[in-house]
Amino acid sequence: MKLDTNKPNFTESFTVVLEESGYTVTDIARLCGVSRTAINAYKTGAKPRKDMLDRLNEIFSGDVDEQELALQHPAEHITLKDATIDEMVEELKRRGVNRVNLLF
Image 1 (cartoon, rainbow, N blue to C red):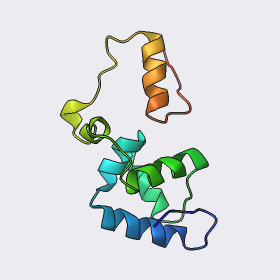
Image 2 (image 1 turned 135 degrees about the vertical axis):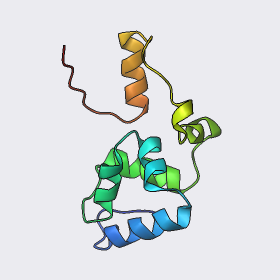
Image 3 (image 1 turned 45 degrees about the horizontal axis):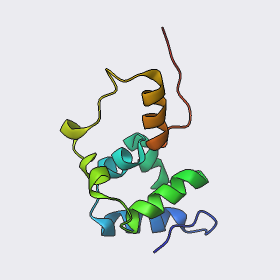
């Protein structure tokens, strides 16, 4: 089932697809690069932006590779500690992050 935010039953559809996928909310959050709170919000009425909807449909359709699936496990997360600013920006974009606040 492809998720569509234009349909009135998005919340119900999202919940069903999530349960049928075998993924946990934590898995989906990690694969999307967002918090569990963001994913849980879709189960209670919030609707994702188009880029997030596309990512969710990609994940639920099985179009994720083994490398991305490895990100489900915290021990295998990529560390940005020693990365350059450019490498950090590219990694954050890859993870779907659209905005970052930097505090010094």
